[in-house]
Picture 1 (cartoon, rainbow, N blue to C red):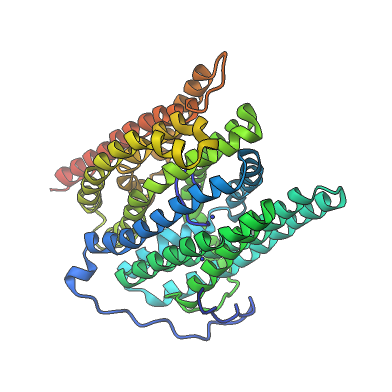
Picture 2: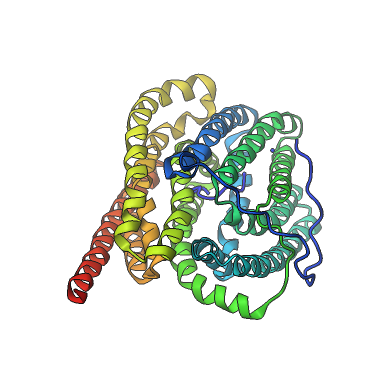
Length: 459
């Protein structure tokens, strides 16, 4: 599934959308007129609920699919599939931050009321997403061909799957999803997640029938159908148009955001890479269950962040106040933490008996699963970190990420000394994320204090 975030997480039947227009075409389709929403429908909590409600259903379906998948394939088989899929964790480097620039600029210019600029930026970013996705797909197809020539059929199928999914990654996750921002859009995003998860559950019949090839077919189907629905429902209806001026602007805005964001996203990918390095393919298979368990609870803080960020960018376009940005994020974060705490307590107690009864082949992952359940608590405090991107102070965010990663690296090396245990990796991640979040809050307080001082001097 190609849903971001999902943290270190780092994949659905629908009517397909129209084909993508030629890259050089000028925008022909009129942009969807702004929707009139009631005050309740446009409130931040309503927006979060619109996305989180469907995300909860998706989470339940994904958990059921993950458990059943664990009964159908051996840990080593799932480990190979997951190991090849790590390439999609590193692939986003190719977009250079241009699509991150769209994520910041689109809601910012909506807040300023400049609809024409929104259209032009979206058209340029769409052209870039298609170009980068095709380049990544070509490179991975070459790897698949090389594996096929050497008779490595499973590896060839895995690389081919990720070649196709790389296009979905750039076009869907890094372009289309950036354009969804109203409550109506977030409800549709949640609906797409439900369709993808339901399709993934149904397509477990392919895994039962074809083993590793079934894993590939299932991932391809989910990714392609999800992208088709997202394209059909796209709220900004423009054709891709290559525009160097707008691409440069998005690069200038997005490169700093991308630089710090890629550090944070690679943190999770690096953790999985270290698991593969020290625990091997079978360990990676066991750890796939750990990642699934953690991601199953990350949907709530992920939904909050996905809604809060564009709202903060819009708010900054109107008021340019750090205090206002903190106010926007505060209540959703408090509610998220309050909801997660009892859920995680119950899950901690039940995970051992459930795994032992349902998927006994993965019983070795239980200690690591328990520790991974604590990570969403830290993530629930993260939406306020969007302040750094909105006010363009990514330098402070970089410092927090690097020191957090250093704490993670030192912790994991200390915990695996002598004997490698899977639980060492989520424990180290928890330590690193705690350091990272503490520093982020210190830096946000610094920005707020600086704003207050400037206000006092101005008066």
